[in-house]
Image 1 (cartoon, each protein chain N blue to C red):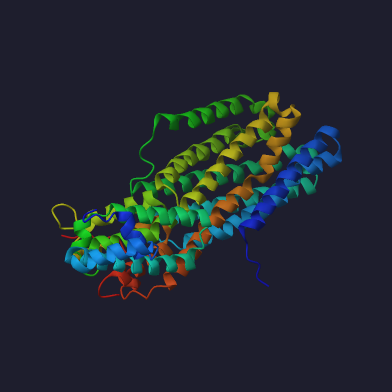
Image 2 (image 1 turned 90 degrees about the horizontal axis):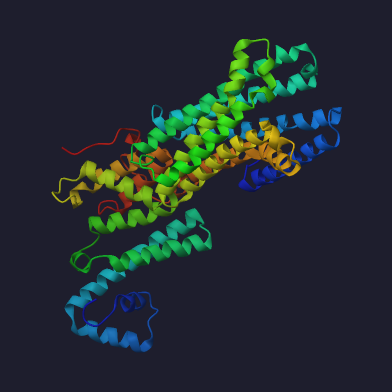
Length: 298
Length: 174
């Protein structure tokens, strides 16, 4: 039996993750250090795996709707790889939790290797977003900015600097591997770069002036920004102790991948819509020649 | 608009929404004025084309009601701002009319900014007209370039749609 993924399903999963995230943090406040708290704070793993698997599926389908060597094909391919790296990361983290490796010396060795897929996922996402920007730039989008566009990047740079200053609170800074320590310290940067590129996509969505494509881009932007903001509330010592902020930040952290999945699904549904519309018109005799470069007269 | 009939009155008359008194006045004037008779023919032609394209779009897109209203508003605004001489002089579908119809199709999907930028780029790549206007012979190349441009950012399904819709608007494909 085939199940058709709909935005309503993903919104339901988003809401479910928000509630679970909030509850997990509340349990953490009520029962600090207890096994139930450790379970609650790690239980996002399976949800992240499912959300990334859905995103991977639709990224691959969108990728196949682009010409093989086009920049947009590369963009969606890199984003699909990023989802795959995220799945590996969360599967690895969940496994180490189930094996109870987080409490013994393995935490500083084997467990800290999760930094490899973590940073890889963000690097691939950044590269995918750069490729997407480059593709839009070919028709003149994302090349002109206003002064007020500098406001949010300034906030992101500020958050990143703050995150870097809280590096002692990060999990893998005590890893036995120097490379893992460096990768962990760099993690706020690896989140900030996609968020900054997300702002460029937001500008592009504005320049599109409406349409379903722009809506999909906006979901992508919000998922990138929410990810960075939730990381900030998780690391900041002054914020993570504040009940309401910690609850909201954790809930957002749990729900972020569903927002990305929604962005990708909306983009894929646009392709489906376009294919349906194309069926209403007669087949063009030159259609087999479609995957070619634009032509110029003279 | 000329001859004491406003744009709004013309649109209401063509859409069958004019009052009986208004309709009689316009019909009486058209009967004695060849220029307005030609304009009425063109407007009826436009109305039919838009109705057909609109129903195709509605079938495929299922836009929310408010988006559909906004789309119709934009379309009507564009008809009102269309230069009268071009309308009156056109026989069949001019390249400008075809561009307008194609734009009406792609705007709700890709946004007016994307539609405008992609059409400008496609036009620059194909026209030989000194003022950058599209002439009849340029139409297939224009459609091809627009299709390629949209395919590069929105995928082959987008390119295929524009290719087919553009071809169906050309005299050979209609």
